[in-house]
Length: 390
Image 1 (cartoon, rainbow, N blue to C red):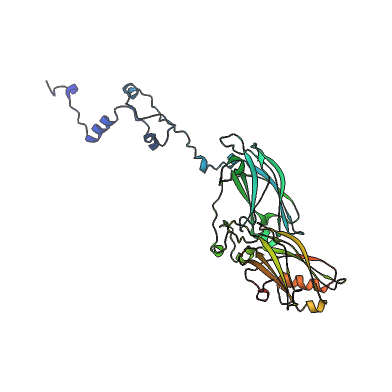
Image 2: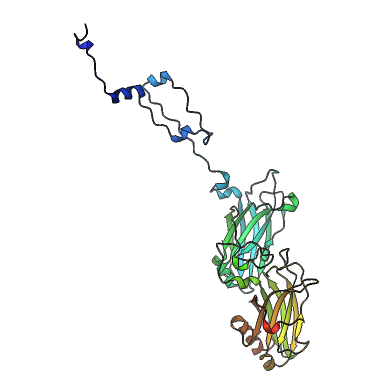
């Protein structure tokens, strides 16, 4: 008989309790991670979406969800820069001779290519600046993941102002001539702010290589032909004029010969004027007011270089008082066969000049038989007094 005993009493169950019983008939299981449902992005995980195990559901033991393994970042975004190897080198700023010496010692742990060996060299650039004008490189060491160069690269005309605002970029590159791979990216690079250098004191480095950074050309130098890439983050405003290059001049008033000796020693970091990224530079000298042909000189031409070395000397006769009233106009040109030569840059030394140019001129004429050498940055505007053909 229904309803006559407590065993026959019908219990009322709420809708919430009914749904809880139907959905979770066994012990509560941990909530799965969202990554468990996307095996495509985590191929190292075992499939977890499988038919339910009735025996496991009835067991009182609680099964834990599978723990995902750490997802390694792609090789291109890895923070472990030691994977590219390290470079050992030494820097010395020779302030007395206005030179920067970079000695490339060796590299360690370079990543070999599919061939299993490397033919490598070190390439150096000063930033900001024209790429080919400041580009130096070591010899190539073949077939080694730990090459040893022990070679010194020297930048002439490096001043204290350069040390305060320039950065040295060193790249370890594979020689494309031996591997027949053109335009191959460097195996790794590093950058050293040169303001950290102490003049006349060598400093050694052992730095991890990094991947190449992108560079950008400043708009102020877009019109120059053959100019290469420039570094965006270290660009300094107002320095476009110095990108024409610089020249090392020596002045000496000879009491024995009774005149001025002008030495054109070398130029550095000249602006490239040819389509190949180089120039064929030579130097013109003009003493104003004009003394006829004796006031004009020209050096020989150095082919396909942005750092020419001349070591040529010229003589202007006259007493010291007379020379003090004149102006020495020095201009650097790119030689072009069959067409007009291209002007690269110039400098004027006279009593009306200023700064280092005025000091160089006055100290030379103020004493006899003492040779004074000084680097001068080139101006991008042709001096009006010297705008005459040689």
